[in-house]
Image (cartoon, rainbow, N blue to C red; front, side, top):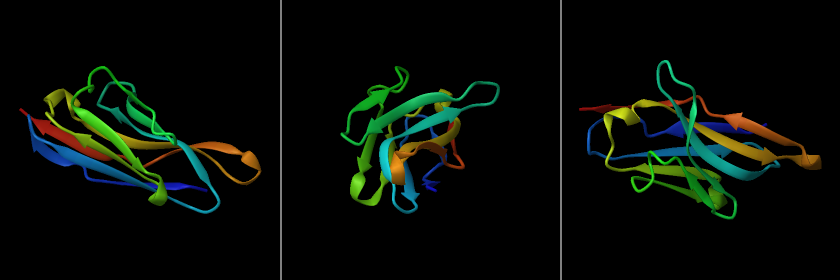
Length: 120
């Protein structure tokens, strides 16, 4: 089993920056995709950004040019650098990973979520 532990959320003023981190732990696994989703009250969870093991990236249109996702495969950690934050970025941010284990079994896993609040 893989577990994800997030850190880095908090309260910031509009225009500010935050950096989220998510570390994966477990045994005998290979992560294909890591990324971030977010969910605000009354809304569905939505993709923010994902990155593959080959470092291909996908971003939501709403964050392009402001957020940057990166990954350190050596320590199974993904980062989300968030710049020029807006009040509408306020949400719980969830780390996500798609991975395989022994016998090529594949799984999805989510972190517990970290709150990001952007004040106007």
